Image 1 (cartoon, rainbow, N blue to C red):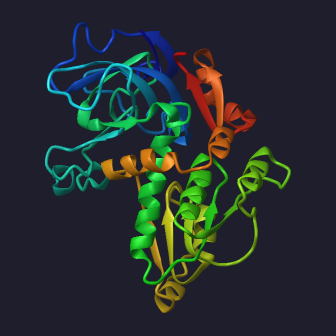
Image 2 (image 1 turned 30 degrees about the horizontal axis):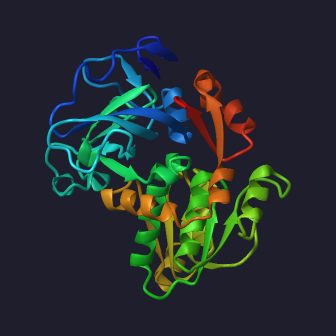
Length: 339
């Protein structure tokens, strides 16, 4: 079957034929599914530049892809809740051998750092024709949402971050600002609005950029000034994280999702005096994936469709490049693997 991944010997992004994940029927507790669509994000582009990531032990090739949606082909003995034809989205992180968080099925909170992540670290991903997973690592998706289900993985990250912000806020948040007009930023703004919070989006794209137009059509103010009770950094930039901190009201909570390490000035005294909170959030829990699948049906379908730009399987190298990212007219590039 076809697969897109990294050859760690030649240090190249490449497509190749690999064996299917199972020759006969899935083992007990496992589900075989056909991957229909694969989303691309900044993590994939960093992997393609070999900035981090690793293949499975004893191998030199890593199949990429962690934002997948697929359709069940077969379920192994003992599997309940999944039948051929059902739509599924896989969770990404797998637990380490023994930390307390992983022991309670919260590998997103792993304390040892010895977790694996499919398509990222130590385990093959889903940029291939077929994949095999344990049933408990799959999230069921209603058939009428299959066309936007590729957004569930990034939406799960948002669900966890927004829930964290609400739990950390000592008052009643009413205003929010999201930094970044990409897919995660738009989804964050949509979930915050769903929770009754007036939300704006700030980003570096000019006012006539296609992303800015998507923001306005979705009904969010773009680059409006003002402070907020909750600020979400979804731009993958340190400058956005610093700006988010400076935008906080007293009791405000800032959640950072993608900014890398960088030198800078931190407003420690302001945070102390104003009882503000800075938090990081990564990956997502099973509950966050379930919330994403549930809330997807409550979000405006036209906005969700406007986030996605679909490309053919063969265009993978373009999508992984900076030019491919900048040439996209929609925030989320999605590759179609099957009709």
